[in-house]
Amino acid sequence: MAAKPSLTLKRRLKAPPEKVYQAWTVPEKMTAWWGAANAASRTAETDVRVGGRFHVGFRGNDGGQHDVSGIYREVVPGKRLVFSWAWRTTPERESQVTIDLKADGDGTILTLTHEQFFDDKARDDHGRGWGLALDNLEALFA
Image 1: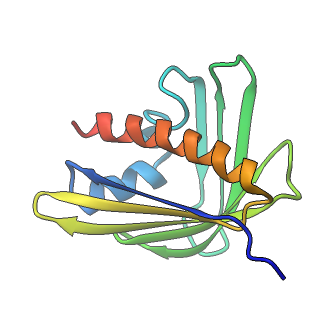
Image 2: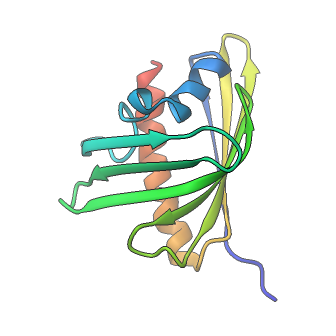
């Protein structure tokens, strides 16, 4: 069986791991950065515990509504989140996201690994999307 495509992105953020973790788990903080730079109507819901669900929605640059949800598989406050990832429009294409946070002086090294993509196009599209979202997250802590 062929391995499914994956991607890994790293960023150094000017905030301690606990604050970066909150940006991924507290709905009011998630809506400040999730999606493309000018995404509108951002919403987020979380139940941050193993087996708990999350949902994020936003209106994209294309005017379309984008909704993604999943289940938390691993939760280590301030250090690591692992969750499933499925878009409302393609729920059968579930993948997995891992967020690792490591203290680095007065900041945090964030490593995002997104695995089990349906195909290379899905990986490439998510690479662009995550890049834009991480730009927003970086700006939030600038």
